[in-house]
Image 1 (cartoon, rainbow, N blue to C red):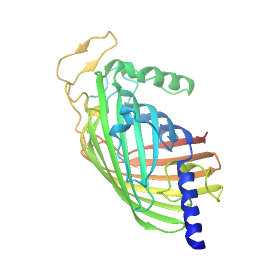
Image 2: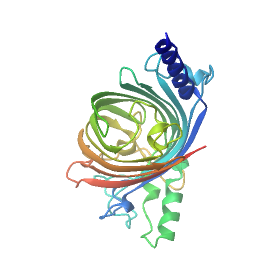
Image 3: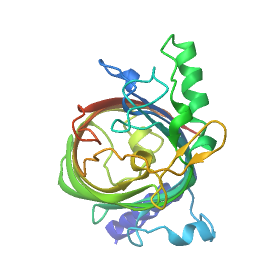
Image 4: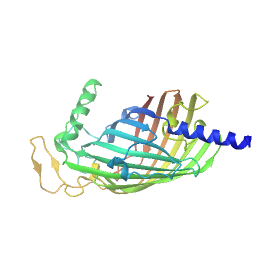
Length: 326
């Protein structure tokens, strides 16, 4: 009888701990400046601000109706995010970019997402909805020019020839499942699916984690903080190889419905624009390190990927993220 009472108390405490209000901010900067051979070629910059939260009753908003959960016992972490990304060609000193190189393009969007982890069955479902714009109103020219001015870098000269504006709406889905889970080692496998006007394709990946860390299925916030654990310090390494099949990438190929170049005088050129030879099959690897103590965490990730365009070299970016628990 005592053992049954103890078990009920333990389950109740676990449920309360999982349902308590938790909030976290993440600020990240992704840039090829954070790599040994920094260039502005290809995907050159991504800046993002996220607000993650978990509450017993997140509300019956229409935004929550299209987010997938990983079962009744899942640990659900919701988020709102804003992000800007940009691509530039290898030579940014010319006013007439090579049409067979990476184009000038930038996107600004918001995202609504749910990271749903099932600690019993050890799998994760992640749903992300994206809405935004590509083109002049994503302010890629202004941001890159400002950064280059204050870092004594060459001024980008070809933004008058960025890809034409496009409305971006995308659905991104992720599934991950445990393969090996030990005290200091975890191995997972998974896949992503992208559908919409930003990107269409599928990705297959595996994740290796080693070090002092929380279970991958204990919730997203727990990976980067120690608010609810006996161990206050987290320190671990991650490796994620991946293989992508790209059906369409609007940031490189232009508007899925219409391709053109947007010019500074607000006139769109309707003449056909040569398209670069896009690489539909990409290989990549992410190597990262995460450290977290109580309510503050940080991570650095080095990302190396084959080129999005044929006959161009592989490309690398570094990601620096800071996590602050509220």
